[in-house]
Image (cartoon, rainbow, N blue to C red; front, side, top):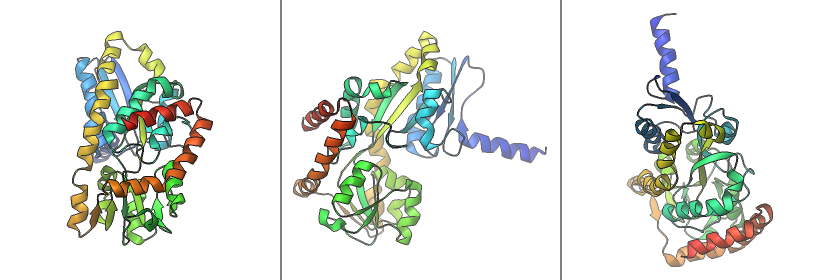
Length: 335
């Protein structure tokens, strides 16, 4: 094989995996579904892996497999951790849908209004209410993103009734239910397809956090954004339980030291940084960004009160601790 072909193959492999050295005693595989240029990889998972390597003085090496690799499929992250195909994974609770019956409580419309609040609530209820449905893995952290905003092209949405008839890309069944009750037409599609569909008019808008609007360049085509803060989405950062238990005690301690409370405390700041400047990008192209005052936000929340009642009833039925969990997240959100 020619030298340039060998180089091409090596470059392709390295573009989808990141690691250091091969002299480590313990080699761990981490997988996620995102491109390595995004903040979740650059600021969170890559530094976490390197910090683990540093804390173990080179005893551990972590190889990261990202989007485009065999391990980088969004629908497979949880199963890869359960089955030991990957040692550590990052994924979305909602993909594929239906696996988690209790964790979606954090997605109730207008429950939280900041990433800090959402992450604090999610992590606080985890031990007593969510542990059972995560029992197949060693949970390193749970994450929630900053409040989702509604971005549209060519149409202005300010009040709930402005949504009638609009085709809006949605991230989850809970937000689909909310928008449908408000008269919109929910559309499911991967966020990577939103730019083209919004540009061509195949959809009228999208619900995403500012970080998502920036990452997928939707700020380049959106003409109107309202910061409704309607929802958040939960993520898991988890490890194969058998692999974790098999590690030397000092390695387990190193993993614990950089996970859990210490890691969750960083999430809100990262989401804020990742979304920073998104509103300016829209405004710089002549777009409008609406930040609702308390009265307008209350009007949106009131408009989806019926939706919330239905969603809570479903949670209470499907989640074994649903009623108590709903009461707890409502209590925490009110404080």
